[in-house]
Image (cartoon, rainbow, N blue to C red):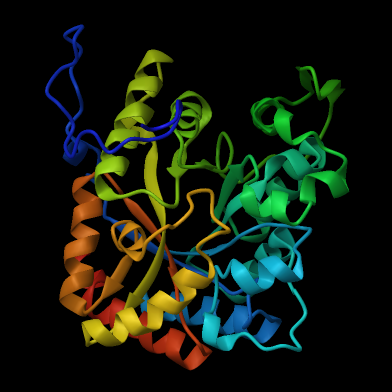
Length: 372
């Protein structure tokens, strides 16, 4: 029985109407714009490093991807380095590696200077560990450095945060993370949109704060909310410009996207203006068996460090994108049918050469299917 607040795979497609006669949205109504694809760069993991971060970002731009993403943790344990691989692969781990995790916003600033077209996002800031006043200033500055290409992903913190004692190091109560995140989003919006910003909450409060520059993107950079629960979907509908969950199947995504849209409508917001994105572990090869051989060791290594424990490999296979070109085409379309409009791809690769090979194959075989 699913726990309260967790997404359940009850409906593979949105329904025509609910019990109150309200119209249920067809997922296909919401992607009149092109489907877009982004690449996670290795700001953590066994292949993290400045050269590899830049090489990946520039290759993604060259190949025609729409975005590049970093992720965020300030405190990152050796245990997490070895067992929560969001960039690279299990095979790339070495005994003498330190748990390098390059700070997300600093990396975005650097990448803004070495790219010119791709959007640059973070998915997602561990928002409760950030000072919202300082974060608003940093993000507005990054929006200028990138000339309006920033995507500001925000999240509550995760099982990985707990495993690294991240909240304890910052002196933040993990149980208050949802309330903190809600207040911090509202506080940042006040700073971005008010000449003299005023905000009063339980955890942050200020009056007449004159903080400039305001962002290039108006009224502010898109705020994408991380998290795979019903609560995260509702938070997106209430305050987010995008939703970017991880471990959800197409059926679960369809249901979550409906929650986002229904909540947005309840709050008088335009549901069609909200991006439905996904983070997906991915491997694309010419041969399906080769793709699974590449993917499965890393998935198994990471299986206990995600919010959703992976008790068998079929669970992961239903929620990520591994296989031949034809397999990947089918899987992408399943998520598009569920309402997804943006894919953040966390490719699994033992070397940067292998990453570039997979990116090139994706650019040759998948991107053209979703271009005008």
